[in-house]
Image (cartoon, rainbow, N blue to C red):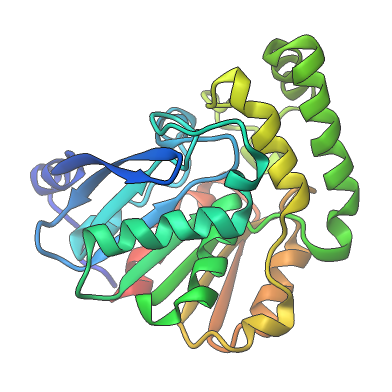
Length: 278
């Protein structure tokens, strides 16, 4: 088991020990680093249309326990949160986002492999980055992989329709649609959870169209990845179905899958990830 931190030490590791920006083509990425200075690096990539700030407000994906053994970098994907971007769909395709992740890894840990964390879109970002440069990573922690491959076709249509909705009626119409659909059942007990779209309105259609045209790598390609992988999934969420996680687990050579059916178990993911890294 990863060691539990005393409250005072936990508070110290949770404070940002570094913040900064990284200039990329047509974007500037904002990031923060917490945890033990000088320790190995782990980097977390968030989900589509989210951000570091949204994840904090939502109360999900608390990886603080990782700070007992690692520095943890969290960044806003281009166009999201405090990062900048432009309204060009190709900039937000998963493979393009993977290039940003690799550049951040080179910036923050130029001489040592990195552990990559991802959630939803972040999981796709991590997998495309690991395929492009497998030597850059030592382990992967992949949470709630999104609907993929043949099953993704209806989702593509919905994302394209959402982009058109924003262009015609503004982001408030998309916000209203999200409130009606609500969160998956496993998150119903999270009082502060809300779906938010943490991008400027002019960038939303481009990001939505990029998601419509993107996908996880084909399963056969994943057999080449040598990394130990922890897959974390929940049920009752058609946008992040168990079928995707199970397919990934079947094709990644060194993967273990944990499925949560309750909110309490979802909140154990940080500790499970910390244990996985030691």
